[in-house]
Length: 85
Image (cartoon, rainbow, N blue to C red; front, side):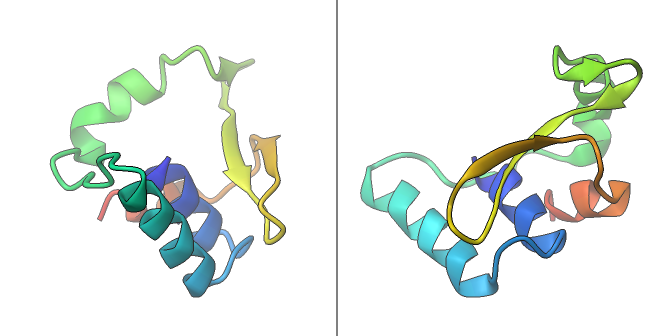
């Protein structure tokens, strides 16, 4: 969830305070929001073979500024990588 929210931020769908709000909500529920142990380069092969890949394109579930989730295959690959850092 944190990675998807970070991608939403990097893609410009949400603002920084909204990213912080989602992370704080996850933490307040006692869920683990620490994603630092995951590295894009280590997960890339799994991401590209995931069930969300359709017709050779990776589909992501992101959120917009009103908090609604949406599915898209249009995103900057660099933002996917940045979300892991």
